[in-house]
Length: 64
Image 1 (cartoon, rainbow, N blue to C red):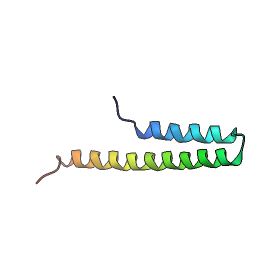
Image 2: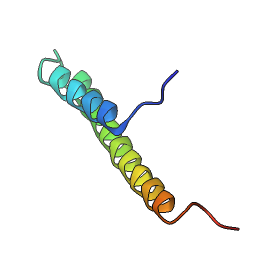
Image 3: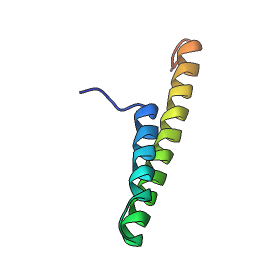
Image 4: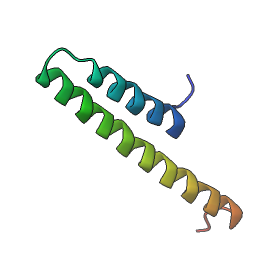
C-alpha cells in the first residue's frame, strides 16, 4: 500500500470544498469545510516533512 502524498491531500481538500458547495444543509457544509481544512493541514505537514527529508539526504543522512 503506497503512502499518500501531499498532492493526494490537496486533492482531498479540493474534493471536500467541491462537495461543500453542493451540500444540502449548513451542518454538512461546515463538516466538509472542516475536513478540507484538515486535509490542507496534512498537505502542509507532508510538504514540510518532504522538504526536511530532502535536506537530510543532501547532507548525507543523519549522523549519530
